[in-house]
Image (cartoon, rainbow, N blue to C red; front, side, top):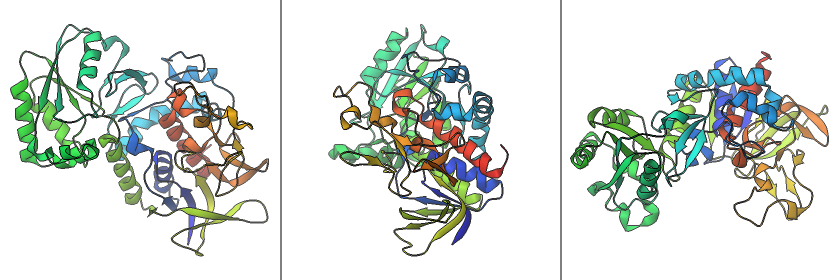
Length: 417
């Protein structure tokens, strides 16, 4: 089985890169082992939420200069970052995903626990606030579903109160989710979204919210609607006589899963090949040090051959890296990994402190080509969370790195840079 490009991974960076390559005429195969980080998304994308000195940047591209030279953003370069950031909303729209926000500046999002965090872009069903929009003298009704603990309505109401709003809480009980409440592990946003599907159910929910509304001009709801598409959100916004804010819930994420499904559909529609539930377990190299083929659990001895390979398996979180007692390894290609030599430097005993292990990644050159034994592998690129030189969790940069490195890797393979 031979393709122009084989991508190991099925998450954000893999799908974005695969779509860009496939639409440009390359034959692309994605090997995906299962769940990915989009299932745990807040419904928003982060580009750079925190600089090394702890400050929160506003102008994102200029702030990149404060990052280490080994950071993936520094490898992309500010001019190309500005170009790619400007392309992002249009790229996702072409895949059926509507994003909003300022491509070059941070906004704010409100979390399910009532905290405000920097955000770059968000799906259309998650509200972003510009810095000048976080204070008001209006009235807010915060509505939650009975028994739903992954959206802390009192904390959310408290956050709006700090912004200057007058807040009131209400609870809606829907018989369709009554069975979910019997088991707390089932009372999750995705299960609720499935239970609330159907026009008659949506009609009753909207009627319940309208009945709770008094003189408020804003209604805040948990984002548990529209697992398949965003039409329920449009209906809610058009039929409730107030401005409606949707706030992302605790994981799993309805907009995140829907985005992953939409990207996968766009990749397949472009003619790509997707191997779900399979794991790359072994790689073969030719005499020049280039990757010749990879082998998977399901295909056994059948090689997947290509001219170019891309590793996008998610670092430690996605099992793209493997932590042994005294070493961190990349198990598929045996690539060089950037991590402190002493185990005691891998983590801080203070749970809330910066953890270095969340920044472990594969060593790459300035074009995201992998390094193995100190030498560059000519036809293997590494993108997304697998890249070394960044700490996406600490920086709030995971989605931005995934998208920017995916664009650059694709353009490098296409010969446009």
